[in-house]
Image (cartoon, rainbow, N blue to C red; front, side, top):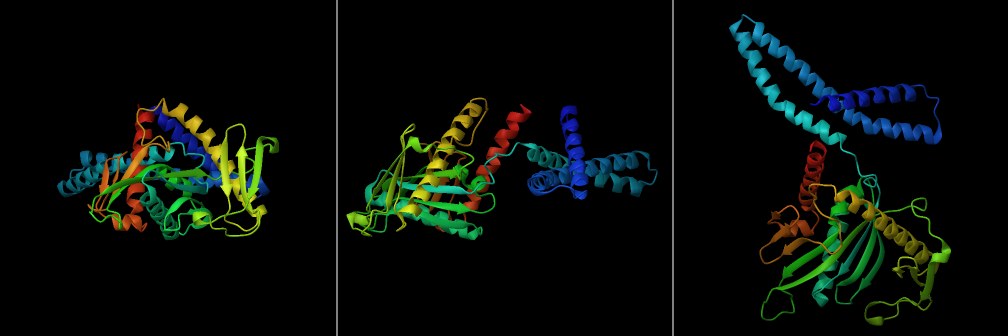
Length: 359
């Protein structure tokens, strides 16, 4: 490793020791203690990797000396064999340390708001949107995450015009942030007598959950309308004006919430979604500026970008950003195999960012 990187590693090790001593002193309280504890915890995994790398290097140096100086043929051969195996491990250990040093997305630990909307394709698109929403719901359950439905706009035939949910748990946004974009489906609709394959689409947006401290919204910037909630086909679902439509006048962003019977609850949910959408707009602006400097990207996060195709007749799912195809569409749609795609995307993103740093 180059000298500048070694100096950086040494600085991290020293900071880790300082934090350990400060926390052991037990004179910190409240937010200070929580802040330093988190920093110490985040650094611990990095420092453990640095320690493992340094031990391996020291061992390799000792084995090299032994292989060179030993007059015992059997001992010399054993040292050379162990040295060869250790040298094969060293690049992987160095890679782990470099990956650990990559700056984390500040929003990775946040909860996420998932939004799914039917795109082109009529009722078939709405049915696919519903299938995608269920896929993420099952995936969240498999990881032990919370999945709170915020809003559902159904077609009455089993499809969804749009739906949103708050997904809460560990590293939710980190794992789901690359799901934003256009998801395309190719399959034969049940109503298609001739058996022709139809292509339709749904749009997925994954937003980091924003708190009030993240986005300040002035009441003067909002237009709030209330109306009677309705179900599929205009069917009334309650007899009071409980549905809420909030328009953010400076940006034109509109959020509608009608799932709750309480106007107060719908307004609170709508503000939560609005805050997250505005936060995401700021985030996208920052990311676009940084992306211009990158050599490569997994995806832009743009909702208009086609990211994945689900081909039911062939039983395959293809992610176009990383050219990955899995022939296990049922397991992907059940959420069971979604990790295989997400892990591959995250690995590709790490490799792209690492290449930028090393370049």
